[in-house]
Amino acid sequence: MKLTLIEKRPTTNDVTAFIFKPENPLTWVAGQFMQYTLPHDNPDDRKTQRYFTISSAPFENNIMVTTRLAPQSSTFKSSLFALPIGGSMEAEGPMGSFTLNAPAQDFIFIAGGIGVTPYRSILLDLDNKNIPIRGKLLYANRDNNFVFKKELEELASKHPDFKILYFMEPEKIDAAAIKQAASDLKTQTFYISGPEPMVQAFEKMIMEMGAPTEHIKRDYFPGYKVI
Ligand SMILES: Cc1cc2nc3c(=O)[nH]c(=O)nc-3n(C[C@H](O)[C@H](O)[C@H](O)COP(=O)(O)OP(=O)(O)OC[C@H]3O[C@@H](n4cnc5c(N)ncnc54)[C@H](O)[C@@H]3O)c2cc1C
Image (cartoon, rainbow, N blue to C red; front, side, top):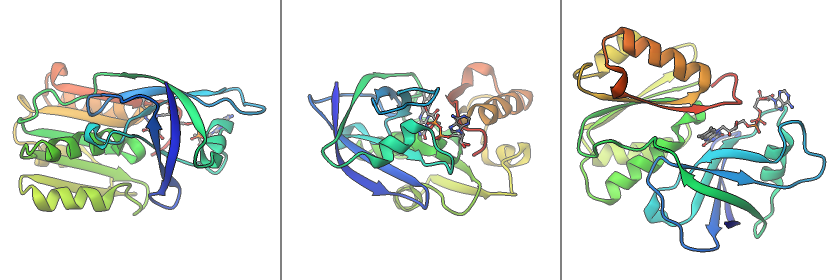
């Protein structure tokens, strides 16, 4: 499906949200992702395809891709950031199961850096459906530039049972922080999203704390070495 860029929304110093209009109406479940193809001259060895979460909620209708431009960026990212309004790329999907199991249930969301993208979609979706948001977002970032901070804060102020806990380097999300945030390690569902090594480390930690593996959902973002 062809996606046409209609807006570029700088979100923090190095993160931009790209809003694309799909050529036909598209439905997806909050938390899903797509595979995008952006042909460009002289692609590097990582070539012209990437996966990105749809960071917009389904009611927003357009596809939002939110990503970080690294100092030594891939040719794909450079081309995406240089794409003019009206420019297009191809997308396949939506796909993926990093979606909310039970919307009314209490959850723990863990985000590392840009790994916050699926949570924007999921949380705005709940709010739009008038479902009270009950859970905690533990959000780690390397600096104070937390992506979507304003929107997340607005949701927290509307939903008294939704709390956001920020962790800025060198502060880390550790076992004590998770234990304190969780109301019941055995029954709550944990969602972990971020760079692959971070997701694996949290999965191990949460399982060692006693949470059953079937209560842990993961969204890996390969290609990022750090948050
Ligand atoms: C299901 C899924 C959902 C995802 N959702 C998102 C999302 O919402 N947002 C998002 O940003 N990412 C997401 N990702 C990850 C995304 O697909 C990319 O892997 C990631 O953004 C890195 O992009 P990049 O490879 O273009 O590298 P860049 O972001 O350009 O660079 C990443 C790192 O690699 C280094 N680097 C760049 N080029 C090279 C090179 N040629 N050789 C060696 N090192 C290099 C850079 O210095 C930097 O440290 C998702 C992945 C999956 C599988």
